Length: 175
Image (cartoon, rainbow, N blue to C red; front, side, top):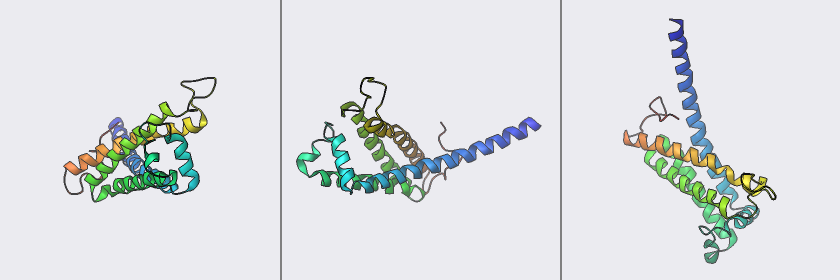
């Protein structure tokens, strides 16, 4: 009997941690997207983006269309928009899923910079030794990608259930 009670308590604790973790994943991703997006309006960040993006075949074309600052601001607007869409989960899970899918694409593009940006690998060591900057800076996008994949899946499930969907409960996808 004691084992059954402990198992039930552990399950309840586990479900609580899954719920709390889901909230942290979703709104941590929102916070990062909005915050990093807002930074794109600062000159120092626009120049930092340029140093990374100018070597990327996926991004460098933007500089032929607009200035370094304008390109960074476009990226910032995209990031802020994705963050806002993901935050809409409680009342618009489909929009949240769309925002999450956009964040997946954004994270994959950012991760592609690991292969195109000079200085990613620690000089004298090479792969798998990341430099602190830009290597370590870019590596964080693995976690952002994971959070975006999770939020997309959870929001799609909620959307399929109608109205507001499941409210991040035990029906959520599990790791």
